[in-house]
Length: 164
Image (cartoon, helix red, strand yellow):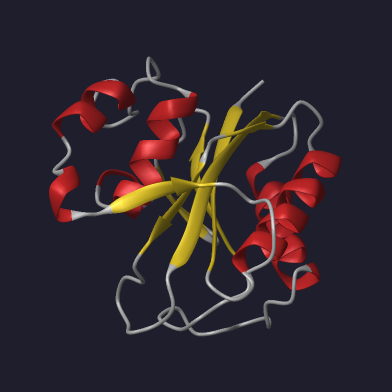
């Protein structure tokens, strides 16, 4: 059964939206594992800070069904269908890994291109699966995180408790 990793981020009422997203994801995929949450600056546009985390689960569902469910959860959490990429958002769910699949698929490129480029993706991913090998690079996520330039990508851990 493939293990799936999904990045979740929000900068509009991020605590509330991520709490709801984690609840929706957990309902869809029991046994969901959740990384710590991280606060970081918006990337690609000027905007409020984001809170990001990564979730992991196993599923027998085909890739297309997982992607459809992720989009449905985004919409349920207030994201407009077809929303622009570089804008503030209630919720962004990005499929990072689906087992060891590699390639371009309808709705996803695997592994996700941001996996090794963004601290708020690689850090939480390495937290959940430090010994998992990147399906293209062959190195573990923990090794990739150890070498990552964290000083150039400031972030701090936060809780999802409380109001935004």
